[in-house]
Image (cartoon, rainbow, N blue to C red; front, side, top):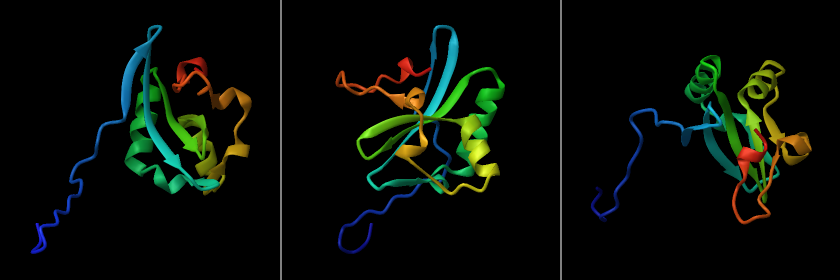
Length: 116
C-alpha cells in the first residue's frame, strides 16, 4: 500500500483455466477472453495457457478459448490457435470464424456446449 492508501496487486503464480469440467464424458477446459475492439490479439493468450490447453487436449479433452469479440462469442480451439501461430497470424476478427464456431447467446446465456 502506498502513502495514499492505494493497494497494488499482481499475480505471482499461473492461474488455473477459467473452467474445467466434463460434458457427456468428455473433459472440457477453457479460458475466457474478451475484447471490445474489432480484433483480438493472440498475444493475449499467454504461452503457459497455450501449453496447458495443448496438454489438456493431448490427454483426451476439449481445450479452447471462449472468445467474445464485441457482442459475439466464439470458440477458438487450441488446434486452431496452434495453426494460426504456425502461420504467423497475430490477431483474429469476428469475420474469421465460421458459423460452427459461433456460440449462441440469444437465450440470455453463453451456450458453448451447443458448439462442442
